[in-house]
Image (tube, rainbow, N blue to C red):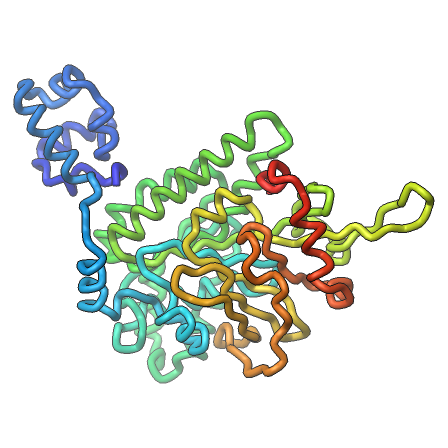
Length: 400
């Protein structure tokens, strides 16, 4: 809440401009200054500054509300409580779709369709409310240069051919998706911090960051002293601001994540940088015999990040060309699994009766096993892999 802009604290336009010249733009900037500093930059008396402090404090302080008031607010505007994914089974489990006012993470190995899902949701957010959309704009922060305007138009044209039946509607839709390519942690954080006014001016109804792990892994080598603390600080600050924006404006925030491989000895490596066949490793035994050392492919960024997101969707490989979508963490939905394929129209759910045995249901959200494109995983029970994975020391798992 302290990230709220001073303009939204109902200060005069003249005073906001004056404070802005001193790089004081948020409630936090204002409240961190002493009385004497505020008197100097505002040019006002001690008593006037005291009134301003009370006004700014009230503006950014979280307001108490009862559970009944929350229920009434959602009941009064049910259409804005969720963004429908148009994947009917998934929407039904999630009570309407991707929840507004919260952070939803989509994680999985390369090629499973994380970016495809993000592009599809971008189209959906621009649709009228009568079609399950949010009738607004989208902020899309691309850290991997993976966004494709051609794919955006292809999904829109094939998923809603009756609605996008003219170039004018396609132009309107694409004009409402604002793309930013940010390739460093500092630029991503700076962009996130500046989104508040943009959300208001452009009527933004969805924020997507694809992906968080991409910039973090490039800049923070957790083997170096101090890097783990810096990385945790960056992730905590980013998640805090995004949660504020989601709750303040009641919009969904979608974040994609990568995967990592945790070995039974607690060692973590980046699974997207090794061969998929290396998900299970063999090491030499002391007697010269071969012993199997199990590796668990799980979501990257560790426990702190895992607990920062409200909902986690896992995309994983099943068989060619079918993949599996798992609702692995949700405040409203039970653990669920769906099969899907990637078509011209985006993700399409498939009716399958042979649901895979979900042996790791109910385990630590940061240690959920993710299936990659590997024949080795199909021959090995997850039940056998999990004990060796969870047996690792907690200090090692925090370094994912």
